Every structure is written in C-alpha cells, then in structure tokens.
Image (cartoon, rainbow, N blue to C red):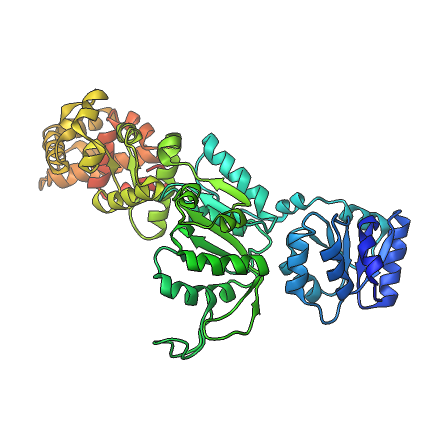
Length: 501
C-alpha cells in the first residue's frame, strides 16, 4: 500500500491515517473510520515519513496495527517533533504496541481489534494531556507554597510531551529532583533516567562520557564503552550544570539534539538515539550568551519548556514540611528522627539559606546524629543558624545561647531535685493498692520501686492519651518537655516517637 508524493502532500486534509502491514485488517479499520465520518488513508512507512516531512499541518489521528520492518526511532522522532498533538491508537500485537508507546509517548491508546465504533471514536478524541491520569504517584518537590505548586503544575503539564526542558535555579534548590519527577510522570518512566554533571567532568573526557568510545580511541581506552546517550536509550538524559559545558562540546551536543544521531569517539558509524533531554543550570545563560560563553542556538534548543526552581528563602513557609520530609528520610536510612521546637523553627525561618534545600537536608542529618530521638531546641542548632543579634531581635531568652551540654546538665540537676516530689505527688493522686504504699517487712529499694511505679504510670498515661505526649503530660501534671526527658530516661522515647515524635 504505497502512497505517492501527491497523496503524501495532501495528508493535511485527511482525517485518519491507518498504518498496517495487513491489507485486509487495514481495510476493516478504514470501514469503522468511515462510519465515524472520518476519511481513512492507508499508508506505509516510507509514505508516512514523506508525509511527516512535507506536511505543514498535523493530521488528526494515526492508527497503527502490526507493521514489519518499522524504524521506531525514526517514527517516534517524527511524531514527537512534527506531529506532537495527534492522537495515536495501537490495535496490533502487544509487542508492537509496546514499541510504539516507547517511541511516541503517553498519547498512545491500546485497543483490541476488532473494536466498536464508539470505542474508537472515544479513543481518537482523548487529548494528549489526559495521559497524565494514567501516571501513578510521583515524588514531586516537597512544599505547599504557591511557588512549589506552580513548579508541580509545570512538571505535570510537560511530562506527557517529549519537549526539551531547561530547569533553572540556584544550587541546592532541587533541580535534579524536578528532572526525575518529569521523567517519572512521563511515558518514558519504564526506561532509564541517566544523569551527568557537565561541570564535574573535564572537557576532554565529557565527549566520551556522553557518546561513548571504541577500544584504543585514546590513551586509557582499554575497552569499548557505551556513553550516556546509549545508556539512556528510550528514557531521559539529564544534563546537569549545562552552563559549565565547553563551547566545542556545545557544538557537538547541538548536532545530536538537531539530528538525533551521534558517533562514538574513535568510530564514525552514526548511532540513532531516542532520548529525552532535560538540562539544568544555576547560571544565567542569557548573560553567558552575551559574554560568548554559551551558544545562543543551543540555548533555544534546550529552552523549549523552562522551569524555574525557587530558592528556599522565597518559600520559607515550606520549612516545616521539608524538615519532616528530611526527618523521614533519615529514619528510612537508619538514623534517628528529628523534631524541632517551635522556637528552633522560628530561628531557622530567619536564616537566608544560601545552600537552599540541600543545606537544610544536611542540617537535619547532622542534628539526627547529634540529638537522637529528642526535641531539638535553639541551643542545639549550630552557631551560624542562631546569631546573638537574631536571638535578641526575636526576644528569645539568653540561656538558649548556652552550649547543649550546659543546658542538659542544668535540666538534669533541676529534675533530680524535683523528681521525688513529682513521683510522690503522682502516688498521692493515683488509685494505688495498699500493697504498693506499705513498706514490706524486709524493707525496699526505694529508688528502684519509685522508678518502676513512675515508668508504669507514664506508660498508662501514654496509653490513655493514644500515644500523644502532650496529652499524657497533662494527665501527669507535667510540662511536655519534662515528660520527653523522662521518656528518654526510661528508654521509652522510641515508642512515643512512633506515634508523635
């Protein structure tokens, strides 16, 4: 079923293209299309490629059955770049459908042949954006601020398409996390996500890292090696710190983005690639272009869909949520949970966070080691996060500036004085049996006895309060911080942390 050039040029007025190596089945599909008042056009691979190249406007639909000797890379590139808005239906074998989905993207709909007219009509009218509904839970940047909501919206919008994405923002804002979210929300999520830091690899080695090399192509090349483009085939290649790439490498990368073909170092055989490109940088590329450090044509090739990652100081309302997120990660990695007091959070909200979210993550990991399983107050924070002038401005008490060890020793001394009085008060207010308060004939180890009674009463209070430390403290007529210290003394803090801390 060949299509001549005249027919190929007239593809703009056709309503549906049927691409199938089985003429009988293709004709049956055409009959269903006619019932839907759509004019079918039966086509083969060569004619389709000519149509793609010569057609200025997009046809409304493409139906693909079982096709022989199909160049899926070429077909996918054509459909992504020049026919990016048309709905695509796969009605052939599962193997062909899988290849089509990998090549084209999320807008592919699977149908079982023969299909009803109503089913086909519905499939042809599903917009490409609806494919996002098929994507499961994706780890988006943490936060509920307006800035992060905008980032999440942009990620979900661009994920279904294969457009190049340029992620901008300061160092530590989570650009790679955003790139991974785009990949995980896209039809390529079952294929590799490969990241490379263009600024961390010497310019003379970056070409080999990206495109691979042959054995003996340079000193030290003792074996052939695949590059990142080959490893990421069918998936996503994340080019971090693209602004640090040398000008000669920018030229070579631009050629690959334009032609989707590259060569290994030491080999002139062209290799076709089907890879989505996501780039990121903390630099101002427009300023770099003005200074002659970045190619303008490469910038516009990458900057199809820009996403700006906000700095932490501009979305400081997300701080508590980020602290919880990093604390959960620490627990998952075998470290202790971190919980900050309201005063500590208040101080951290005034810190400028030059290292952004990455710096916050490092701080929470450090605190999980220094202050395991207990509340972290202002005095526990490193000095640079709690300068004296800030504490004075926030009207926090001067003793918060003392070293952690001093505060802990003072607290323990204070509790040692009051401990017996508090325990005896609990005993007096409790409904204990005479056997507990009467002295046995042989005497008793009072400290051990009081230790046991106090621990049991605390356990009962926690049980009655459903594990909520604040409620248990009220039942025991204690301050919450005092109860937390007792939980630590009795090695019960992990139990309470499972529900609240």
